[in-house]
Amino acid sequence: MFKKLIIYRISESWQPDLLQLDQALAKQQFEACGATQEQSTGWVPPRGEEHGAMVESVGGHWILRLMSESKMLPASVLSRKLDEKVAHIEEAEGRKPGRKERQELKDDCKLELLPMAFTKQAGTWVWIDPAARLLVIDASTQGRADAVVSMLVEASPGFAVALIDTQNSPQGAMAAWLHSYDAPAGFSIDQECELKGTDEAKAVVRYGRHPLGIDEVREHIDQGKLPTKLALTWDDRVSFVLTEGLQLKKVELLGVVLEDKPDENGFDADVTIATGELSKLIPDLIDALGGEGHAELGQLPDRGSSTGPKAAPPDTAPGEQPF
Image (cartoon, rainbow, N blue to C red; front, side):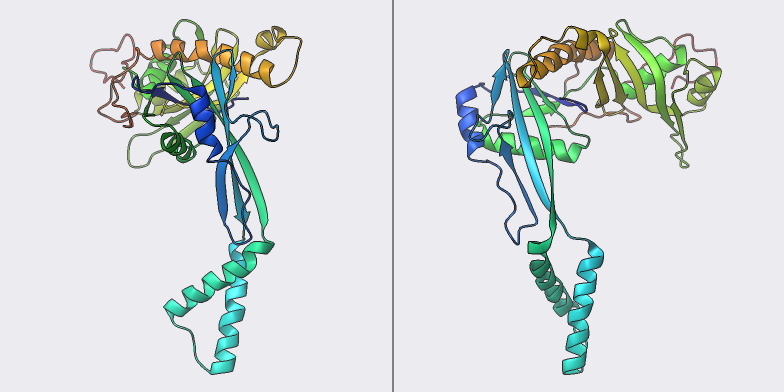
């Protein structure tokens, strides 16, 4: 259910009220794009049942689903339609439309073409853990997560969040783990990482399906390249790729987890398994990064910057600079 995680801490001032949130999200219910509407965003019942609840509670974990729809209007099609209108004016009136008129013609063309455009839909899973005061969004970009947060803030009075912050920057910690090839307790290093230079060239080195406990990786780090991605496994149960921005990507539940799956299939079983594993992984990862920081709610923590906290490599030789 959750393949990409962006994680937030929810303000202590927010008072969770399942019924109130469900009613508020119903007012933001998804509606398909109208004939001349380019995009639409709203909430849908997470179970996929018509007229179902907008917030489902399974074992105390709240699951939501945001749906977006956009019209696919290729730029080449719009440009061709505009050229036809411009050519008609030149032929009929013997003049070339100016910049302002061309923009107006372009807008007219878009309105004419939108009713015929194909639509594309995309859903985003959202998990609220009221007890742990965590908001987890299954999004690959911060912009998508921001859209979810904005709608929740609008729907729920007092709702405020901040991206999870840690005492040690993920980038500095990943560099230390790779340099020593020693992951924190409960984690193991897998065979994928990306290193990026900090100089003007911004050189990038990627490893995929390759052992990382080699001198070559350590040399790249010693030369100033820092990890932006590192594949890890937690407790032999969940594999994922950690990014410099403390996002989790390529999240996958491993065989031992699926062996414990309840006999019944469906929504409740999927939620129970996913939240059960991730609600243990997340605090373990925060601990591995030195514990939680002190980012103000509503503010973005400073991650990966030269001024942020970084873990130094162990056994730094005299004269060497910690990365």
